[in-house]
Length: 60
Picture 1 (tube, rainbow, N blue to C red):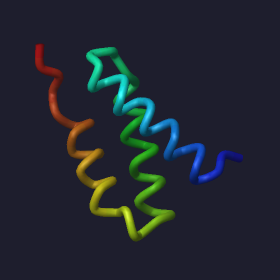
Picture 2: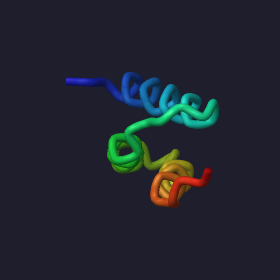
Picture 3: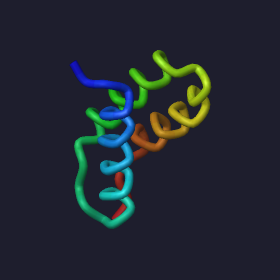
Picture 4: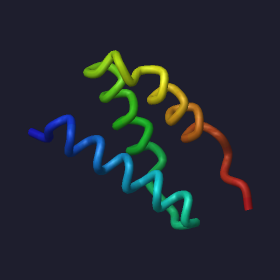
Protein backbone atom coordinates (compact mmCIF):
# COMPACT_ATOMS: atom_id res chain seq x y z
CA UNK A 1 0.00 0.00 0.00
CA UNK A 2 1.32 3.41 -0.89
CA UNK A 3 1.41 6.22 1.61
CA UNK A 4 0.09 9.69 1.06
CA UNK A 5 3.66 10.94 0.78
CA UNK A 6 4.40 8.39 -1.95
CA UNK A 7 1.36 9.62 -3.87
CA UNK A 8 2.35 13.26 -3.36
CA UNK A 9 5.91 12.63 -4.56
CA UNK A 10 4.72 10.69 -7.59
CA UNK A 11 2.21 13.38 -8.55
CA UNK A 12 4.83 16.10 -8.07
CA UNK A 13 7.24 14.19 -10.31
CA UNK A 14 4.54 13.85 -12.96
CA UNK A 15 3.69 17.56 -12.84
CA UNK A 16 7.38 18.48 -13.12
CA UNK A 17 7.81 16.12 -16.06
CA UNK A 18 4.84 17.66 -17.83
CA UNK A 19 6.22 21.15 -17.19
CA UNK A 20 9.47 20.03 -18.82
CA UNK A 21 7.55 18.91 -21.89
CA UNK A 22 7.71 15.17 -21.27
CA UNK A 23 4.67 12.99 -21.76
CA UNK A 24 2.96 11.69 -18.65
CA UNK A 25 0.09 9.36 -17.93
CA UNK A 26 -2.55 12.04 -17.43
CA UNK A 27 -5.13 9.48 -16.30
CA UNK A 28 -2.82 8.29 -13.53
CA UNK A 29 -2.14 11.90 -12.47
CA UNK A 30 -5.88 12.54 -12.33
CA UNK A 31 -6.45 9.42 -10.23
CA UNK A 32 -3.66 10.37 -7.83
CA UNK A 33 -5.06 13.89 -7.44
CA UNK A 34 -8.55 12.48 -6.80
CA UNK A 35 -7.21 10.06 -4.19
CA UNK A 36 -5.22 12.80 -2.44
CA UNK A 37 -8.21 15.15 -2.45
CA UNK A 38 -10.30 12.47 -0.79
CA UNK A 39 -7.68 11.62 1.85
CA UNK A 40 -6.44 15.15 2.57
CA UNK A 41 -9.22 17.75 2.68
CA UNK A 42 -6.69 20.53 3.30
CA UNK A 43 -5.34 20.21 -0.25
CA UNK A 44 -8.65 19.39 -1.96
CA UNK A 45 -8.81 22.72 -3.83
CA UNK A 46 -5.27 22.33 -5.15
CA UNK A 47 -5.95 18.78 -6.26
CA UNK A 48 -9.06 20.07 -8.03
CA UNK A 49 -6.82 22.39 -10.04
CA UNK A 50 -4.51 19.49 -10.90
CA UNK A 51 -7.50 17.40 -12.00
CA UNK A 52 -8.74 20.27 -14.15
CA UNK A 53 -5.29 20.61 -15.74
CA UNK A 54 -5.18 16.91 -16.52
CA UNK A 55 -8.57 17.15 -18.25
CA UNK A 56 -7.45 19.86 -20.68
CA UNK A 57 -6.43 18.87 -24.20
CA UNK A 58 -2.72 18.75 -24.92
CA UNK A 59 -1.37 21.80 -26.71
CA UNK A 60 1.51 21.69 -29.12
